[in-house]
Image: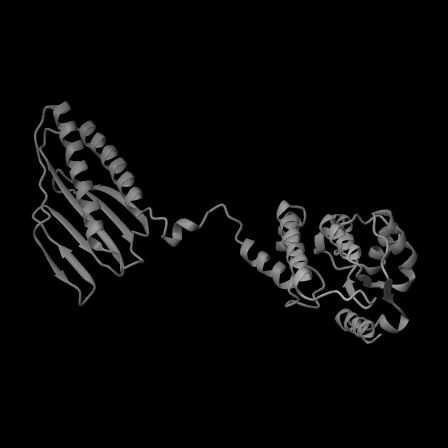
Length: 332
């Protein structure tokens, strides 16, 4: 059963007769109904046992009858009807499961005994159904009620931004700010970066044979490649605020951006192989001095050239500017 909707113990007005009614929702009609009948049968047996224990305490007698052998099947309308003498089961594979157990008690059975049986019956029922319903392959058990409903959306949004599928947004969705913060400051971010660097090293070892003629070159970005802007965005909502270029440039002038360890090592490995390193950044030319100071301060040195955006490039889209800068280097 998918879930229990309600469970009710009710007394018929005209007689001293009690009934347990259970209604559940079935959303996987392909499951074998035999296992469900087995669960129901086990429940009845447990209920019968508890009823008898209560009777022994009260020294009274009662009638408890059930029958699992008299039933008819009808799949045309999606209903299986089980109609024993004193117990009725109605199983609809495509909609609901109903269990109706009639327990006929003698007038001498006290109210306390009936209440005891009720509690014991409900305990057995919930325990049995919970155990039978649990399945690691059942999709409902993969959902955690405490899970943040925005997690999947925000993870997808972040990844698509990194893949450049989402462009020209002014700010990250407010629902995703905490997700971005957790990722950027987590060990997962470091692990993802390290894995990317390992792939770069593998490519470097296989892509080409170095001629050593001075034309072997490698192009690297600066921000969030060699040095990190996370300290700035920690103070400005991790992208949840619209980017203030003047504020970011003022921070860049302080030359306090830390090096990214994973690319720091890669930078020096590339340089030690005799490959010229060209740095292409979307920073403005007016930031050249603090940018150079920042790079040297954290341990970068020996690059061949640092290309920044001039006045003619400021109104050009970043991707277009970097593509043209790369083309000029290749054509040299």
